[in-house]
Length: 402
Ligand code: UTP
Image (tube, rainbow, N blue to C red; front, side):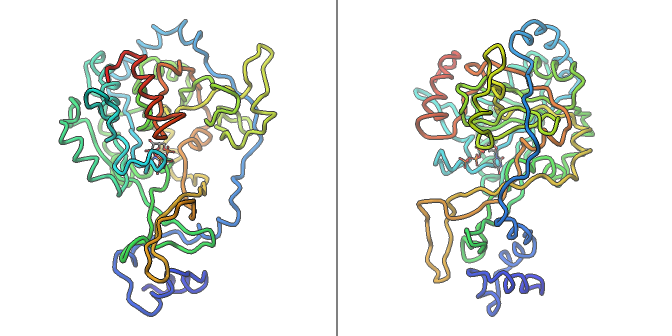
């Protein structure tokens, strides 16, 4: 064991690791200890995210989009035809709320036939690539936990009709979870309890995987980043791409009108005068309910995890440290007596960076309103709000056979 790791285990009084001061640690676990960021342990005592001053930000509303739809479509489609637009599917999450033990994209939402989440997303993208007559380069972020399964699933299903030469996978980084007292958790004989480091690290993981070279070789100028769990996600949407390009801004965010002032979605705002996203739990009741003179909510546009980023600006901010979010989760572990513990309630902190913080780093952003009943059917839970049931209803409403 390297001296600095021994020193860290001692100085932070690690309950589950102290045995490795006297016995040899398995090679994998030793490497994890060497690579982990020990400064994270100090952060659990100061978990408040430091935010600036929030103020409202307006979006390009549906009526404005509608009025210039043809023009935006033409601009966006032309960029797609010239291979200037790539897409990033964020599929490294663990989907703990859904409780499905494979990659979330492998979930079957079909009723009378199979319809996998990945399949539906590819079908949504194909609408655009068929119209453009070219494939959009698609980069899929997985995690160490689901990478093999995800690749095999796409192979097995012949990429759902997409050209596999335009699909590339990359793996996001993992970080260890710690209990509420700062003890690093051990998951098995030879591994710490590692979990994906949030969806904010996607661009640095792409660079680590060497895919920045692929972007440059292909001449990709814009990246449309989207979540795996919204089955109505419109990907490389020419109208959205065109609207952002014509605005001259370096990023865009698809937004929907909040269903109610307290809906649990991040809302577009200004933070110290720059476009940003305020989490629902950061809004005071007064802010959440504040109205414009026309009766609309001041913080009324929620993000749906569909962003467009200009690639040169992504490179320019690539070295910036993103804020760290510390979240409470249920993490199984092996206790100091060797017992496997499967907690029923949250027992640990996970460390994540979030893509929504990228908007602030990009310096400017065009929020573009979309119709939530046509573009927002997230599958977060098994039942209830944002569930398989609600997504099925919305798929049917949009004419998709289940
Ligand atoms: P969520 O915030 O819903 O997280 O992810 P999750 O891990 O999938 O689900 P829960 O919270 O455990 O139920 C939003 C999007 O970000 C991706 C997810 O795959 C999803 O597309 N994501 C999340 C990653 O790619 N990596 C991560 O580390 C976390």
